[in-house]
View 1 (cartoon, helix red, strand yellow):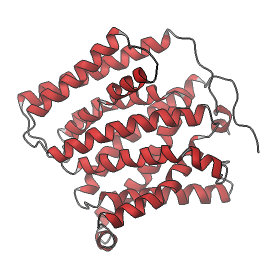
View 2: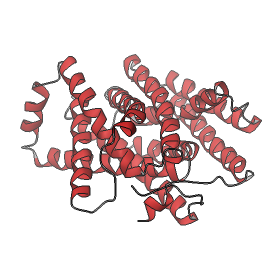
View 3: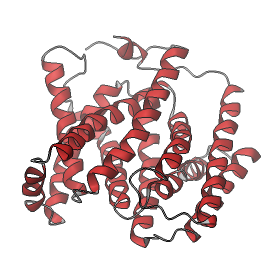
View 4: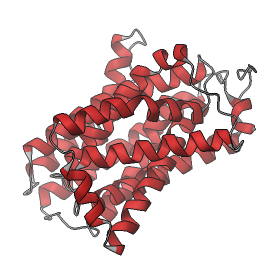
Amino acid sequence: MESRSIDAEPSPFLSLTSAFSYGVASMAMVFINKAVLMQYSSSMTLLTVQQLATALLIHFGRVMGYTRARGINMASAKRLFLVSLFYNANVAFALASLKGVNIPMYIAIKRLTPLAVLITGFFSGKGRPSTQVSLSVILTAAGVIIAALGDFSFDLFGYSMALTSVLFQTMYLVLVEKSGAEDGHSSVEIMFYNSFLSLPFLLFLIIATGEFPNSLSLLVAKSNSLSFLVILILSLVMGIALNYTMFLCTIVNSALTTTIVGVLKGVGSTTLGFVLLGGVKVHALNVTGLVINTAGGVWYSYAKYQQKKSKPPKLMSDLEAHRK
C-alpha cells in the first residue's frame, strides 16, 4: 500500500480553492435542504438516501479506476467510526431544526460553533484564546440571544435541535482534522468511510422513529413531481459535494479554517434567507441581533486569521493524495 503522508505545505491555490468550494457548497446546501423539507418532512430518510448515494458513487468510482481511494480496512473503520457518528448526528439534528427554524436564525445559531470549538480547545489543553477572539465570540452569542427575542416564529424544538447540531459539528471537525493529518486518509476515503459506516445507524433510526416504510412510499410518490425530483437530485449531488469539500478543506487547512469559512458563508446565507423560501417575520430585535451576530462572526474570522498568520506554517499530510 502506498504511503500518502508527506511533509509539505499545501499550495495557496489548493488551500483557497478548497475553502471557497466548501463555502459555496455549504451555503447552497442549506437552501436546498430547506426546499426539500418543505415538501418532504422525513429528514432521516433524506439523510440516509444522501449517504447511500455517496457511498455507491465512491465505490463504483474506485472500481472503475476514477479514484485512488483505498478499500475498506477494519482498523481504519474503527478509527473513523466516531467521525461518522458525530457527522451524522450533526446533520440529523440540523435537518430536524430546519423544519421549525427559519434560515437566518438557523445560520445565526450555527455560527456559535466557534464558541464550542474554543471551549473544547480550552478543556483539551490548548490554552486561553486571545482577547479579540473571546470578545468576538461573546458578540456572536449575544447576537443570537437578541435575534431570538425578536423571532416571532420561535420554535423551542427547532432551536434545541440546532444547538445540539453545533455540539456534534464541533466534535466531528476536530476528529476529521486528526484523521486526515495524522492517519493519512484522503478526503475521498474519509467521505466513503463516513457514508458506509453511517448506513446501519441511519437505517436503525428511520425504523426506530417510525419513518420507514411510509417515508419510502411517500418519497416514491413525491418523485412523480418534476420540480420535487429536480430538488431531490440537487440535494443528493450537493450532499456529495458538501461532504467532499468539507473534508478536503479540513484536511488541507484545518478544523479552524472550516469553521471560519462556515461563519463567513453565513453572511450570504443570512441575507438570502430573508428573501428566499419565506418563514421570516422581520422585527427590529431580530434584525439587530442578526447584524450583531454576523459582525461577531466576521470579527472572529479576522482575529483567527491574524492569529494563524503569526504562527509558523504547520506541516500537512495527505497532499499527495489530493494531487493525484
